[in-house]
Length: 349
Length: 135
Image 1: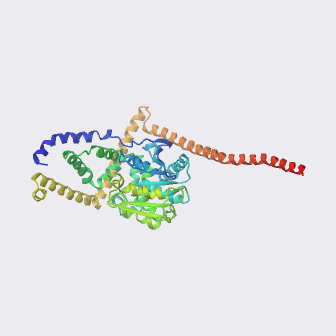
Image 2: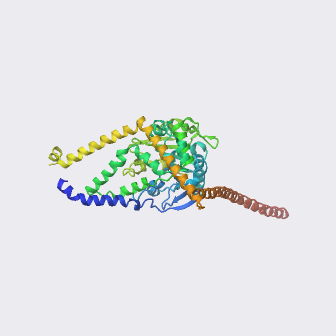
Image 3: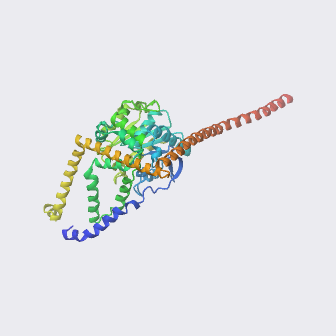
């Protein structure tokens, strides 16, 4: 593009860029039709009906306590839920909701032993099945791993863990919050619901230039070159900006047990008196790691593979970031089919 | 032609490339910066200050609202917490009811089949009696 032509497009591109940024909150995400199966407190279990259900074992999707689970169903044509439905799976999703100050007493035990356990129960009841596939992403994956360890002979037949922190001692996050410099008790005492915006800020601060400069520069450049970047950018930007609060007790436990004391990998983590021993995981296990994941680096997930008692363990490592691996433009053609193939082989009667 | 363009990029392309290189170097430098011990200490202290300020301002606002005899955030949160506890209990009761109903559903076919067997037995007995009579 000649310099003169670029210059002539500059005013129009600037207006378009501003419009994309300003109308991001209006972007439509999570559009696949769904129905409410069960609710408790802020938690909701949704079911996405498949018109071509082929596999008996339903899939229960579990996302992190930070950010919303709409990342599983970002936008039409780029939705993991839509993809799974097309592959014939019966899909359920746990939405933790938006915790408020009244939920400050919700700890990891409440999420794993109550909310997740009951969501599993309701999924089985709704699907009229005895077993399911549990698919967890990020902290959701860690919660699923804890659940599987506590219920090795339970209803989970297959467990899929995506970019899941298990031993986060080598991560940047551990450097930030794992030492004495970070007083987690002060934060948890000050905020009954730790603001999601603060956690989002910390996540973005891990790659400050990439998140605060490169993203916008690329968007502007795309618009300047006449590319239609609006839909893809807005869906992701809206999802990133929507950060619910983290209940104080769960936040305190997550930071202390995972980053300060690293209890999970050592088998020292207890939920309601029961030891969460990852060596008790017997389910068919698929662990997915991303090569450029700076939030849950691959090195922090790998130890799980040597710990579990499962006879059927698969590890998939692909290039990509913590979220980009599953929600990037290539995910639909690369990682999603791999996940579907793995689940398909293990989802018959 | 294309080779010529690659060999002699336009000034705009050169500027663009230079900017991207500078941005990549800045990104790398910033990531090294945030990974340092000094930044970790700073981040911890800033987080503490923000949390303390938020708590102070929140507590002050709450005192003002309470002195005005208006239900404050603390009251609303207290009520919501009470509701949540009631919902917890309701959920557990519902689960008990559902389990009992499932047990009842499972027990019913067994009872039905037992009943059918009980009714079938006299019929078989009657048939046996008839055969004895005929002999």
